[in-house]
Image 1 (cartoon, helix red, strand yellow):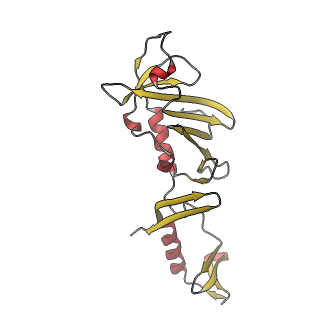
Image 2: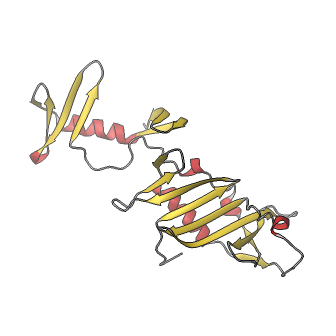
Image 3: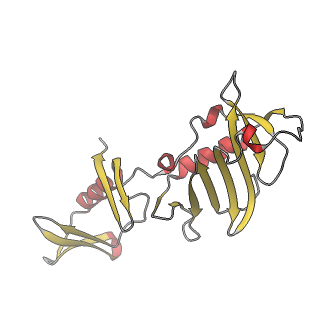
Length: 211
């Protein structure tokens, strides 16, 4: 895949599919399903791409006109990985059953082709799923905000002005820069321990603050 342009990764694991799409604005990856979308952790996406790029054929399976895709676990495949550039499919790989004596040696083929090979899936055990790519940071990487709204026992705003000055409203006094930076650091380090529930327009999470 080196030198190949693509902005979408499609994954189907045990019949459940999702996409990882690259945002054209900030080049960040986003997980997309029919029900919701969420930030993807870039390091996990890069890791998957490296593992897929590193796959090598261990054995070429002799052509057998009597053999069908079911015999190899490729109809449907247990796991499918595809990359596309917009709506144009670049490549798709399908993976099926493991060998009796070594489950990490699995049947594989390129989608749309009949030739079957055996590859070693050790680096892809278990097959990646949607949760493997969820960004665990509550906020994620973002530029310095221009405004912070706080609602609690006190309701106020902290506004970023010119010359790196922060001002608190409605009281209209200059904020302590160190305290604002500490707040932003705490928020950026806040991580999700468990994704409780995903519903379109609503996300339930359990939070933890890094030491």
